Length: 88
Image: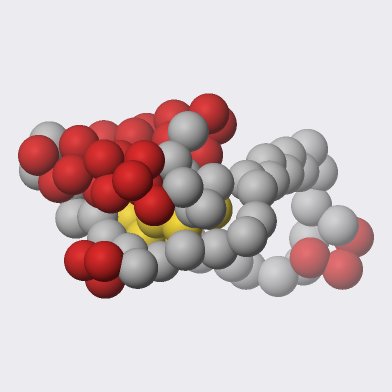
C-alpha cells in the first residue's frame, strides 16, 4: 500500500479476561504504560477497530493500523497523525 500503510485481511478481535488462567496467576507480569507501547490494530479503518485506534492514540500509544480498505485506512492514519499521535 501507499505511504507505508499495512493492509491485512483480518477483522478486529476483542478479548476480555476476567480472571487470569491458573498457570498465569503465579507469574509476575508487568506491562509498560500504554504511552510506552506500540499497538497493532487490525480492522482499523472503521467500527471497533477505528475506535480502538483512537482510544489507544489518545492514551499516548503509537499505533500501527491494518485494514482492507486502503483509502479509509489512509484517512484514519491521517486523522490520528493530525491529532498528534504516531500512526502508520
